[in-house]
Length: 296
Image (cartoon, rainbow, N blue to C red; front, side, top):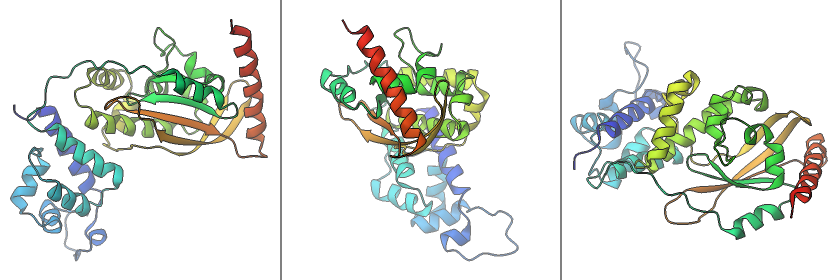
């Protein structure tokens, strides 16, 4: 089976966008004031990777199927790809091989009870599990309280399960909830970009990306940047409708559940002794009260 045309397009844009970020000086090449373009030329990348210009030009046009790991590694080094971008390039190569098939709808993996027990035991941390499409598939009471605007959003599905990407790009309240909305949007699009290369046959993922591209000009813009992110950790600033401003540390941990399905455990915690810790404790108290009230 021939390589998918859409896949070739993604490879072409990705490699060209990474090449555009590297200058000859950054690559250790001599520079000239008579140079017309600041970025690396294709022939320069070819020299750095130890391949012919013709070969690299063909690669950058999207013909990546059958390329060896050693050559991909050399190209990744030449373009100064970080670990996530390198993984993305290898995933694009894997999905370009002849076994490619028509996208199908993957069955969602059920979160086992032991994972929910783990989440519920984390009473002072907001904790939830998301899949590669950014669906929140399990959460503890504090996560529901902390992310109440997302759980209550009309962008959640019929089961009340929110999708982080839909909430950020399709619900206007997300701009108030996420203080650094641009950073949240960029990171979420980059997570979806990595998942699209890892799971090119996931029809639901393709439908989500198509929906966001159609309905959100902001998503179209950040999607076109071809940025890639696999793990996302750091500080998140939120403006909660009930307790106000919070500054929290969030951590992402891989959570192997079944097969190739991608699941990540996300925790939000507050620095001890801060106002954010007091506000998180207040939310935890409310969440525990509500949880007891609805328990049979």
